[in-house]
Length: 280
Image (cartoon, rainbow, N blue to C red; front, side, top):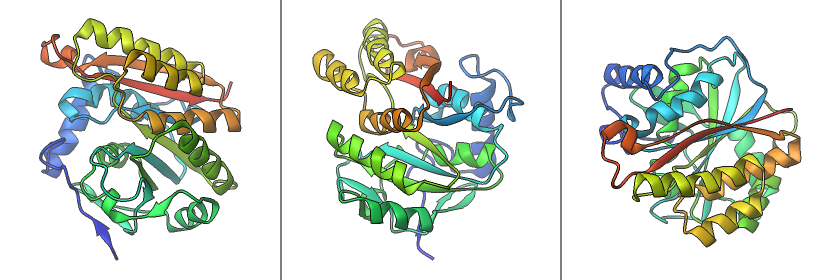
């Protein structure tokens, strides 16, 4: 069994299991979070969510809005978790070779059947553990899933190459590979980075408007024209295009905030958003 060990436990979230669970609980109960603990009683017909991936003390409460909705799911799902490769190490778009991922809460199985089917359908997705070993964008989503779900598998996909054509290709590959399977997409992304709170809000809103309109090319234009430093625009574009292909045409902003709301420092903040993609 090849295990991918936690790379950012003790940095982005606590390495002690009890402290980690308490941190996630605090995210749900935060004034920026849902304000209540899972499970939710309302099961949303969602294909997936854009979810932030910073340290839990900064983005955890915003992420909790998505995971509160996910907590209503009783089915045994596979979560395809797409995240940017911040380090640029390894293959430009890659699933892991590892069989399971470990966090302080325990291990989660990688869906080998879905991985095989996606590799079979794709000309641009490689199998490469090196693209995943150091990266936090996917890892930080897993403890939240462990907190709200009883049984699930994951399929991580890291992206350092995020051009629109690649995102469309990945979405179309996923659409072919998931036929007959129970899946949900997590597109891991923070929004605008290290600008004033007012600037972050303005730029984030421009990106969010494109996302909620399922306007993939509009998102890329906004990022280029307004210099929006949204790190996971590729994963977001995959979910947007896939939603259009599969008829999930209602997109809802669950929560938009920034690190300044948590720290009180509004001079240089990072924006965070949880966004859901649903059937009409």
